[in-house]
Length: 274
Length: 109
View 1: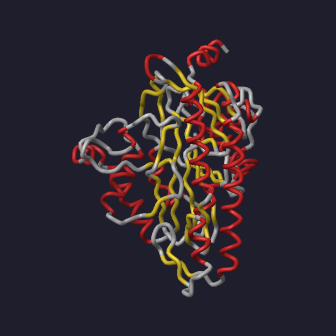
View 2: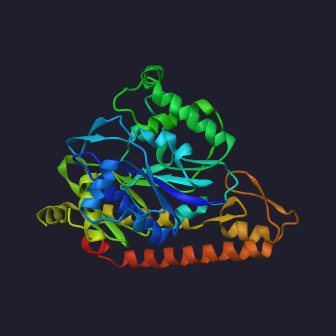
View 3: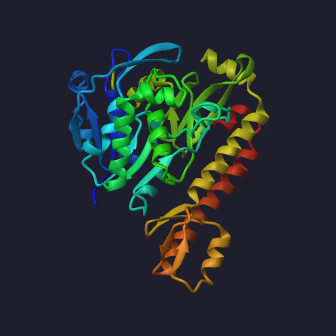
């Protein structure tokens, strides 16, 4: 059984997701020691070549998949364009029998995710999360008040199997009919969120999937990433009345939503000039 | 650096200490999960002690899935190693936090 990690990265004009994927691949090599494949597009590949990044050095497979659907969302006070809806095609794109899909904005600082390999389950989901300082976020609990449970697409494990194939078929169907599903589940239809597609698919499959055995820790897009190294991530997070609080994350993975600061610090870690 | 200084001036020692302790607890909880023969097991002293008296080759993992354990000796080695490492690190880091008297040292600045 081949095992590996699948990343998705499609550059936009504002955000160099390719650099984040390279940084992520370095982290995975250091902490998890697993093969990594990237799903990307020609524009991103050319952008990385322009800053002298050899993708073959970082990825076992470079899978070109032009993702044409662009969306916009507000992040760190700015509108950004992104393309990420091909995550629903992961089952067809992955070269591995066992695949762990990860977002490219997770600072891997432990080997905890290696627990998923060779497990008895065909699918492991992620729905337990916590903010770095425990601020309450209802949106990461349920899709809406009295709505269905929120599930993260940020990290997701699957084995090539009938049930995993059915899951991704369901995801594709939800993506392709998102307006209908958003009306049905009472949520906004813009932007289309993979987390919401995953949530609906898991709800509609009605199978008691087991979970990746850890809590997904996250810092929001409004939190400042002050320092980042392989040993730690230091955040200056917003609390009430304009005050901030420092938090030091060490030996634990953390999902960093402030992409603008992450790109700068990940490029520094890689020794790349952007 | 101006932002950092401002944050330090606002930061409350007690809340930072509580938060850093909480992170250590979460780290300990995560480090006491092991994978064995396709199952995921939350290792506790009770599990380690209980396994020594089991006759059956089947053990329920943390998701309630029955997992066949052919050799409890091997399982116990993995379980005890994981638990001992996790509790030692937790104890040492927790003690070290208690000695830190300001926010800067709590976040290792």
